[in-house]
Amino acid sequence: MTLRRYSLLTCVLLLAACSSNKAGIDPAKLIDFKPSATIQVRWQHSLGDAGISVLTPGVTRVAVFGASVEYLYRFDRETGKEMWRIKPGFTISGGVGAGEGLVLVGGDQGELAAYDETDGKLRWQVQVSSEVLSAPKVAEGIVVVRTGNGRIAGLDAQDGKRLWLYERVTPALSVRSHAGVVIRNGMVYAGFAAGRLAAIGLTKGVVIWEAAVSQPRGNTELERISDITSLPAVDDRQVCAIAFQGRLVCFDAIQGNTLWTREMSSDKGLALFGGYLYVTDADGSVFALDRNTGATLWKNDQQAYRQLTAPYPFGEYIMVGDFEGYLHVMNTGDGSLLARRKTDGSAILSAPVLMGDGALVQTGDGELLAISVQK
Image (cartoon, rainbow, N blue to C red; front, top):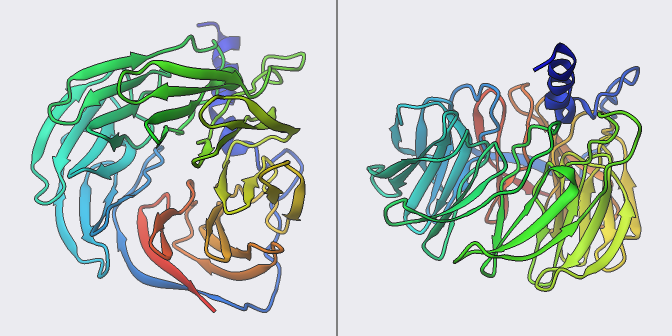
């Protein structure tokens, strides 16, 4: 690899983390406001450092699973009591997947391990094609894992044997992404480098449809990067995806027909909720869009350039985290700021995870919090 190529690649690997901190633009200062809601911590634990990984927690009906680079934990969902912890023997790099009686974690050398949800005993461990950067998923007896080289594999949940493999050519220059896959109604949805979105059949790994979200533009290699680096937003009717330095597009979830498009850039992500599509753009502004047309309903730029997470909508609230460990809660109706709370001061790198009427949040330094919002 030439020095020039290495330097460019290094910049690109850091691009997603730096996109909300443009040269010459300081992060927005926290504004004073009169809170009309409070963020309450139900329970919390310090799990340990996540290193360079984004270790999202997993949740089931009765338990919460979290990880550091060394340990995998199970906690009681209601009380936060630690039920067990295990040391897999490899560096955990991809967050925690949970469901159908399994707890799944991947490693930085391509390890993938499945544990029994109840007692933490190892069910199976296999080797996949490269490092696991996102939480594995399980549905209908199939474990789906995405690796750092862009491949997606479907494995038998009983023994880890590979059932299918989806792979595509990855551009020479692309953004290191921790985005995994979304499984819904027997389909696996995933975005890729060069702005492509694919819908893959869960049982056989057959491509149902594939579409372009964005096309590379610009004169330099960095300007031409237009990768999808976040999870698509999916419900029964539509799937929406957004590319960095690209576009936002919503498709029919089954057929893949384009419903609408608009120019917008994000490396953070988006969420469908009710009649709205919520987006955190590359500059750290949070938008509420009409899900049917893409028209802007409101915009909140009070946390601009604070490296916000993807939005997490629940009930009448929208929550995001930032690079200083603050959680910000906004009103879904108009985007007004309702509440704020600081965690441990380290960056919150991924959107909060759904847990009943509240959420799970994990910081870069490994603080795991179960929270709710009260008026």
